[in-house]
Image (cartoon, rainbow, N blue to C red; front, side, top):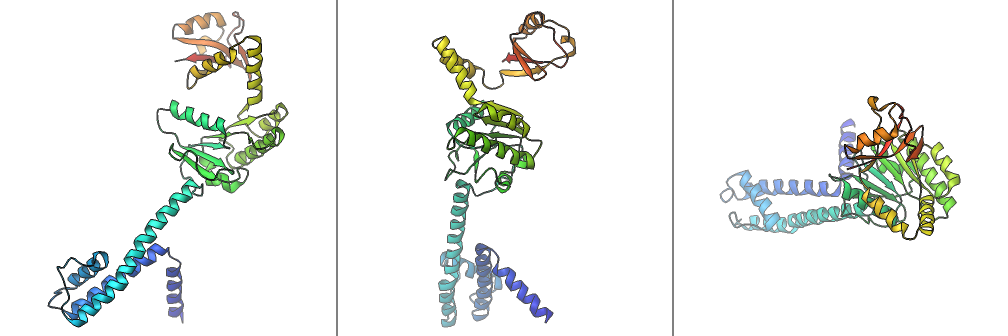
Length: 336
């Protein structure tokens, strides 16, 4: 009884193998079986079992080379059966293999394939800002970046030819984030959902942020917030940086009204500062107690322009020249 159960279990496991694997096993068994049979039916034409198996493989794959040919009626009848069934299995195998490859490619394009890498950038949401952001970070990087795009509205990967892995799904769901391997991500950027009104979009961004931080509290997160009332909520949810796009836009519009043509100037300036040119530098020990004026002159000798100081979370742009540098300050600089 135990032996019968064991055999039944083996059959059950075999039935649940992938179709390609089962067909390959059938082809292997058919070739071995027919190789043995043709050797025993026509030992003079097929001197060894290996010759018989060789003939069976060549017959199923190419209908034969002509180096081994059965001459008896029984042998030829066996060859007919092999051609009809063996060739059919081989054809089915290659068709299934091609269909599987196409299905895998379609799943990849449609965002159904999990991401397995680490230290990657996860971008949540899709809009023109995201497209431009991805274009810029790819152009600035010296090496290919691993980027995962999460969106629920897209049908296919819009950037499949630019080393971007697409995951389709709701970013508020843990399973979607796990499919993007958020636990091993280096950065997460959350873009506002343009299909919703501003308040709903911000609430959705904060909820997504909570889901991300719940799965990976250490990952660095950048969140786009549209309304000023939700900035505190985003910070409470664990956002490392909050970008208020509407505020940035209002600043540009205000400056353009006060000084005509300022929008183009600001955009050109930001474009020139993209990449690693604008950054924070830690204050070194020998800088502590130095005035902003003196330190600025010293840094200019190194082709570094100090434009501000970050002190206890607040950034002072162009502070008074007599301002003393403190140990916990960070210097906002423009550096080549």
